[in-house]
Length: 352
Image 1: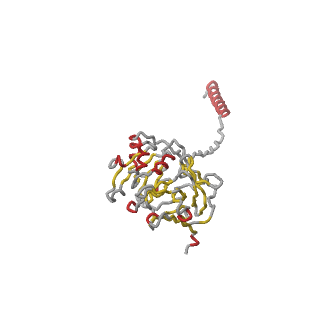
Image 2: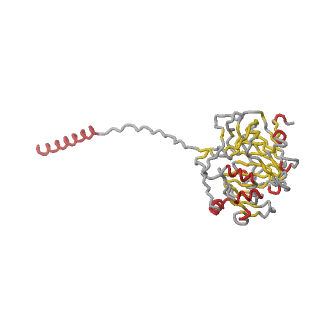
Image 3: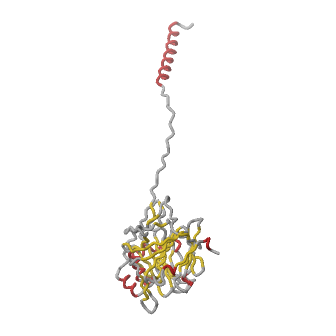
């Protein structure tokens, strides 16, 4: 038999356990349902590239690079021109045109063929505070380069080192600048590659429409009777860009094999003067004048001005012309015979 004393102990133990259980139950924490946290999308700041207006996550810090590129038929197709933010095309001597290609947002592996400098090439590079690349020079340009008007590297001094000769073309149509050497050549001539003079163009934003003027899907720029240096542009409405052809052949980049795609085509009228028996010219890039602007299949008459050394298209009210983000090609045509004679344009629905 269980004694009364043992029974009492068992009862007391059960009571104690029950009391403890009630105590724990009374203090048990009831967790509230966790509310899902709302994901806050971090806004990434975007920066427009100065010479294309395209948005990038990183701000441009590279100084503009300008190179004189050969446009002789024996130099085509050129290497690296599709990567240029802006290409300026102008007469160098006789009816031969050359390109000044401006690079900043994109640097190709090589650029060329590189040709010689002219005084107005140097002036353009100076206004943009660009590092200038050429191979050779006119007497006037040589004096300017040697006096330090612009930081520059010239193939006359570095042929075979920083400038390489292509074996599949003959001189003077085969000199190329290898861009892996860019930092080394800048250090060689004690030049900075930092973007310090904050030059840039003005661009439309997404909410603005550049559809102004008259329709013009086909553009022809005529420099002379030599068709090798006359060129045409065709507007593609599917991607809002222009392709370019010269001497009847589509302009492509040798590095990619792809046609150029341009968002803006500008034509500036300038005074040209022949200065020697080789047909070299002086071009007035300071006085301003008439200009045509082509973008998104439309054309309108504007003006150009030299503002602090930078050639700038301006509206009739004096405001800066807005460009469509993307690549731009700029032609300089002589005042004689004039822009209205040198440039023709038509709408595609007028083509037979």
